[in-house]
Each structure stands twice: as C-alpha cells, then as structure tokens.
Length: 131
Image (cartoon, rainbow, N blue to C red; front, side, top):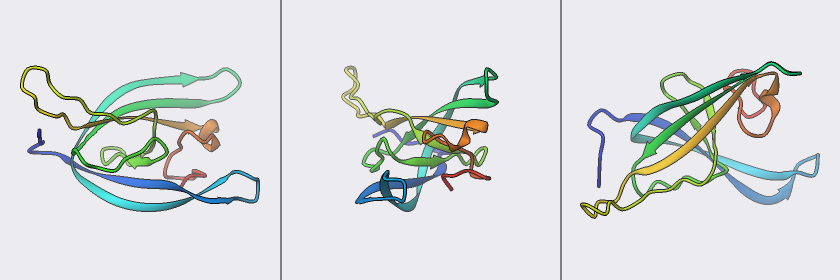
C-alpha cells in the first residue's frame, strides 16, 4: 500500500444520520472527529460567483490511507488553510493494473465561502453554520 513519507494530518469530521430530525424537519446528524495522519492534500479549481451572490468555491483532492472510514456526508479540515471542506462525491480507490498495488483513498472535496456559506455543501470554520 502506498504511503507518504511527509503526509499531513487531516481532521475528519464524520457525520452520520441519527434517525431523528432537527427543528426544521431536516435529517439530524451526529458528529465525531478523528485526526487521520499520512494524507496528501492536492489543490484543485477555484471559482468565484458574483451573479446575485458573492461566494468562492474551492476544490481539493485528499488522499487518505486505505481503510479510512470516510463517506460522502463527511467534512474534512484542510491543515494547509484551516478551511472546512465537504466530501463532494464518493471516496474511492483503485488497483493498479501494472503492479496490483491498491491506491490510497481519493476523496474529492469542495468548500464554499462568502454569502453562500450557509448552503449545505460546505463553509469555512469561521462563522459557518457547519462548525
């Protein structure tokens, strides 16, 4: 299994359904936090939306050790910028057809900052509804 000699510690915030609803009728989540070591954080695209709102969307890909329990509803805190990112899609790994080696888990993530922070897809750790 691949491993990063200078991997970074990423905070994983697991969000799991509790089976109940909040005061607005939305599914309620329980949160637990775990520090996952040996990760790689790769920058992605950044875009700005100025049509009717003022927000910035930022993408990252986080490579986590195989066996890490990360799901599409989880949040990650990027150690490089302190920003909270929402897992954006299904985390996955693959097996090399050349060596048979299983890759790390690739986790696509997105963060939204600015006026759209209260949207359920992400938010910053400062002043966010997700903190």
